[in-house]
Every structure is written in structure tokens, then in C-alpha cells.
Length: 444
Image (cartoon, rainbow, N blue to C red; front, side):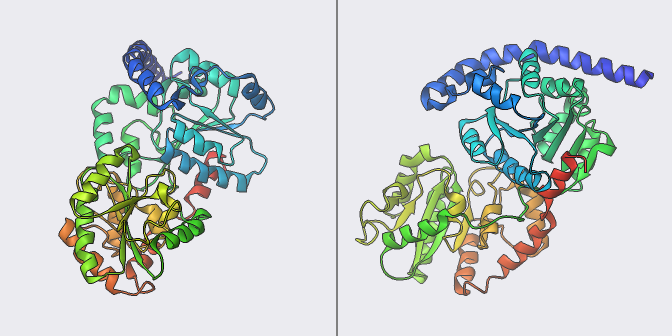
């Protein structure tokens, strides 16, 4: 064994010792908050044993009947949706492959259960004995981590068992890179254990290389999240159209939807809508707040700008829209936004005006709708640059520019929206990313 390899091994060992000394203390500090979540939400207690690597007899039996499954870990809803697309691509390549998806949140678990994976479980906490037991019980042929979930004990344990570890749809923002580079002594040995890192953007390769990933293990495959291959209109969209037609009554209406809004944005975009409907009386407004638990404040903010909101959960129970009692609609049900994008005419993405980071606009783009978002899209900077390069002009500086851009879009016929066609061309660079990632994971 060469001196450099010995030093690297010692470096990793030191990092893991420090990590395993500090992690139990961190978990103890987090325990009260976790227990409070369990009490508030109820569903957090489900699968508690699985989080400790303790599996039911039924789960062990299912795993025992598998021929060394491929294990995909996806932390929450967004990552699980990526995992679902990856599973579909894996099935296209090898229909007999056994696949397990693990996740951290109850909502993510519910989505994972609806995927084509053979089994959904909760991810084990990264304590050394827990990770070791989970690896022994699952006995994976390969471990796939989605976006940024690199757990040291799990990755190290997989490597010691000869299991390849892939990070797919790898995400590394400038902020994250700066933080990792600041603590490179701890980060580099962990990232060096990865067999391959499938990056979304070509320029990300150098960032991962500087953090310890071998150059030969870095692959530019595009974004699975932005891959339009296999994307079709959700079946629920047809029912939503019928429901909305009954709610709004006779007459054709164009719909402006503000999706994944954060505090203050309902009123901001609502104000824009109030001015627009003076010129476009057929325009109707819908809001889908990112966090439904904010419902009372959302309703209060909409009323403060002169609107009379109704609730999606009450649609069909009475003819509220027909009677003129409501002039906008709040989607207070979860898991439906992706389908609603296909029903409306124009979309504004939230968390981009009065909050930082932005929300993912791609689902609305896939629905072939004109999409607009504010100046704060830091979490999707590369995507925004891509759209801008293709002349999509989705980003606006403030509510006044938003009003002007929406006015232009409303003046155009539905089949004369140049932004939609340019957005399709922009997204084509990621088409096939799920298939390419699946082939990489399988070593093909």
C-alpha cells in the first residue's frame, strides 16, 4: 500500500471517529424536536423502528425474497420524485431488477410507496451500528444516493462490503461548495468514498473534484428532475378541469395560478391580479401556498387586497363560484399542484419575490404553460441561466414587471406563446438524463 493511500485511509478513519463521537450528541439535541413533530403530525412515529435499523418480519421476508436489491435513498418529496423517474428508467433496462427506496419524511414515504420500487422503507439514522445492520438486512448490490444525501457511516459501510455508491442528480450550490471547502478536511474523505457522481451541469464537475471526488468518477449526465422524457399529463387533470368548470359556472375563463407561494406573496401577486382583471375580465386567480398550514394567513392576506377567496377542499360541495361569493381559489389540498399546472393558463412561481431560493418551475414548464418568477431564484440559478440563454425571459425584477409581462402574455393567443416553445428547447438538453443515470448506476 503506497504512502498516499495509507495517509488517505488514516485521514478517513480520523474523520469517521470524530463524526461518530459528535453524531450521538447531535441526535440527542435533536430528539425533543423530533418527538414534538411525532406528536403534532402523528405520522412521524410510523416506521420509527426502521429508522433504527429494526425491520418487521414482513419487511425482512420481502427483502429475503429479493436477489440483492438496488437501494435508492431519497430524503424527501423532491428527491423521491427524482427517484421515481430513475426507477422507471431502471425498469426499462432491467425489468427483473429488485429495487428498494428509502426516505426520511412521511410525505416522501407515501410517494415512494406509489412508485415502481419493490419496497419502500424509512432510511436508517447514520449511527454506525444502525447503518451496519441496515446494510446487512437489505444486502444491496448497489447504493444510490439522490442529490446531496451523503451519509458517512452508510457510505463507508457500503464500501467495506464492496457495494458501489453512486450520487445521482448531484446538486452542489455555490453556498454549499463554499461551506464544504471551508471544512474540506472533513468533507473530502467522505466524498472520496463515492464510486461515481452524476452531475447535472458540466461546470459542477470541477467543484466535486475539488471536494475529493476522483476525476474518473465524475459524469455529466444532465438533470433527472428536468428530464421531460416520459412526462405526461397527470390523470387527475381531467377531473380538475371538470371540477373547476362546475365551480366557475358558464363561460370560458383564463386562469392565473400562483404556485408554491411564501408569506406575503399571495398579497403581492393578488394585487397584480386585481389590476389585470380590469383589462382582462375573463381572468381568474388561483393560489397554491407552499405550506398549507399557513391557510388562515393566506386567506387574510388575499382579503386584505380586496379578494374573496374560496377553498379547493370545498369545491363540489356547493356552487360558491357560480353565486359570485368567491373571486379566487386557494388550493388547500396537498400533492395536486403538478396536475393543476395542466389546467391553468399562466403560472407564477413563489418563493422568488419575498423569500430566497425560489421553487422549481419545471413542472409548470412541462405543462407547456408560460411561467414567470421573481428575482430570488438562487437555488435554481443554473436553470434560470439556461432559460435566459434560450430567450425565455421568465424572470422579472418586481411586481410591476410581472404585471407588464403577464399583460403581454394575456394579449397573445394560447397557441402563440413563444416562451413555451423556447422553454421546450431549453429543457431538451436534459432529456434522457434518467436513462443515462440508470445506465451509469448499472455500470452499462
